[in-house]
Length: 178
Image 1 (spheres, rainbow, N blue to C red):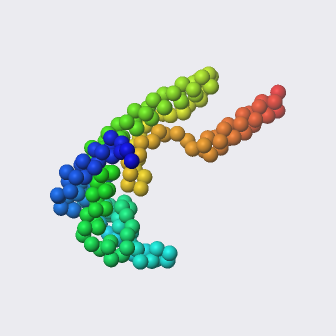
Image 2 (cartoon, one colour):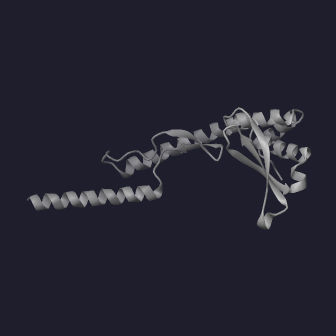
Image 3 (cartoon, helix red, strand yellow):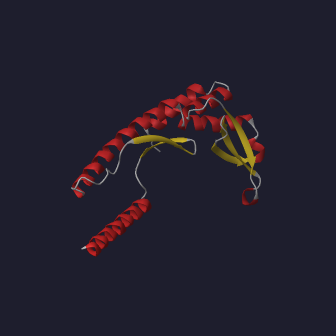
């Protein structure tokens, strides 16, 4: 299996930080998401998954990041927790996340410019708003995501239907007045 440059860099960073105490590694992961500290909690599963435990990193504001699932006796071991924290650190560390955000922002800005050009060609009257107005960073399940402000397809559909109804009402009103 061939790894990407992000994965290789993440593995190097995880190896570099493997000698640090678990709390320091957890703090690095927390800082990636904009928090100060974090701790590990395990929750026993029920039903079909009885006998296993979910392992999560809980940040200082109470939000959590799922990092793994294993048998309950193993989930309590420090070596297992350390392994899961290292794997998470390989995926979520400040250097690779910043690089990924930079690349994603550039790609989204290019996509926004293309979509705005298409919208300008499609609606030449100039009264229609641009498809994308600006870029913003939001957090979804503790993961920073870059989003453009754009109405959802369902919202767009309802806006177009509303515009049609208003236009019909105006034409009816104009024909009734004359």
